[in-house]
Length: 528
Image (cartoon, rainbow, N blue to C red; front, side, top):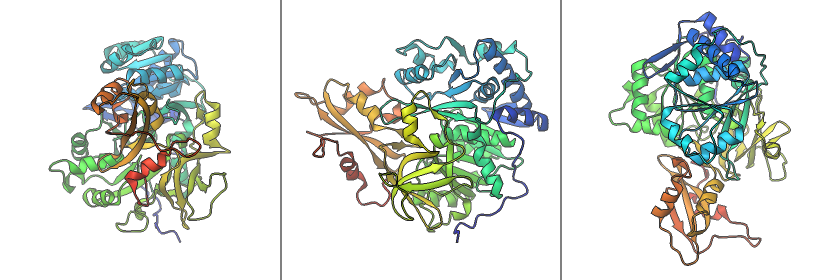
């Protein structure tokens, strides 16, 4: 028997059947609700009619600049209405949007622009110094946002460009840290932003739903698949999204209270920060009807506190950039304080399958722990330019997640550990190899091993074990100073520990698990 007692959809729930691609989204809603706000940002309003027309202009401008379908267009800036104009313009011109994490350093940004082959970069002035410091040349065309951007698009028509796209046409390329140290470009097609909506509609489920009059807060930035997915789900449904330039707990609470926000998508660390704000209480969240959360595991204590204070429905989502964001959901009815499912990641949506395999690729029985694999119609097209890596992760339609867990008798997925070495810092994926490679470039470091350790505020923090080079004793302050210009702030180790040697097995392989287990002890779930 299914323990979650999921409820069927209500008559208010929006499941527009027409859009199959992001190209169709703006034309549909420009027709149905041209004056309805599509995006609110810092007091500015972009209606659906304006979103349609402005994205058309930008699409024409991209074509006039010589970009062809399949060319990459990058965006380096914080959230704004312009980000969504550019997203839909890329869809309409057949180009592929590459959102760049603005927290990255110049070398990291350089890698993404070079690897993707970006031909045109939309750039906020604030991040101009990063581009100037890149070790490689910027793309052939750079369009500064603000007045130059307005002038650049103004002379082009607001008619639809008429470029043919299908649900399988690539539309976005998001970069995720890799086990080898260099981020990989995950290519997503239009279908990635429609498949889960359609799956829920096929069974009449309201695990996650969109209703007439909804105002949705985008807490997760658009360079993350979670933020991009949440925004497109709401825009596909014709609701209003509120874009925060960058998340702060105080502003988020204020927006929820003052704008009457009804739905929000956040990571657990954001929930913790909002609840920790001085003076914040249940009265600030009275308009919220549903909170969608994911990106990292959540503690049962934080979840119960959130349920009590926000007093709305909660839905947990689990997935990867490679799965097109969410593939598994813990529905609202399963959120029972003290209940058996409060530590579950959730169950697969209709049309999504989950299995657990051993090291030989054999499917394991119910309750056995192994690597979780997901088959979803929203899955990635490929890792850009990395066919071998693609073949390792996407096998016969199954995405190998790198997470260790099990599936119970009712089909619920529980995550218990990691097969791969990812660290989750406030929902950001960090891979040790990237940090280790940079650390070992310091002249006083002979070897470095990085692991994730539990952190009450951020979920996990980066802990670095360092073997000094002969005759040296580096100080944590010096290592930090060395890393700052080379790695994004969320990747920096919070603590350093110096060793004479790292533990290895007889064949010389580093026993990373032994180092990691120092922090996790005997806890059943070794992810936080």
